[in-house]
Length: 165
Image (cartoon, rainbow, N blue to C red; front, side, top):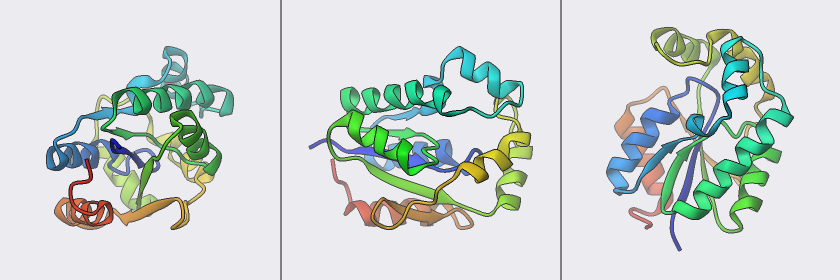
């Protein structure tokens, strides 16, 4: 079986950074789920308008299709609600491992304020936290982001059992 790893969490939690570090460690590709949003969804977020489920369902289906067709793969995807995570699992039709990058709002807001060139404005962070349904241990490994990248990657690798390709 090929690894299908979803690095999830609110905007600004470090999905892309952790995904790239995991990609390097596991020597498997990383895909940023943001690249799979429709142009309309990107425009909506750029305008400071939160996405709704009608915006997200086709995107989640593209995430699942990509995971299914391109595994082994690490993908960054907010996957904020249980229903979204279930949609991905169902679409893949096989095992998907989720890693939730968790941090407090102030830390994440400070990180978002420092990044440039991303269409997701800081003004949408509160809507991300309002939508977030924290996954339980039956659904995802939760890793706090207030630690070194080495520690974060180490926790994920330990959860995966080393190199699970």
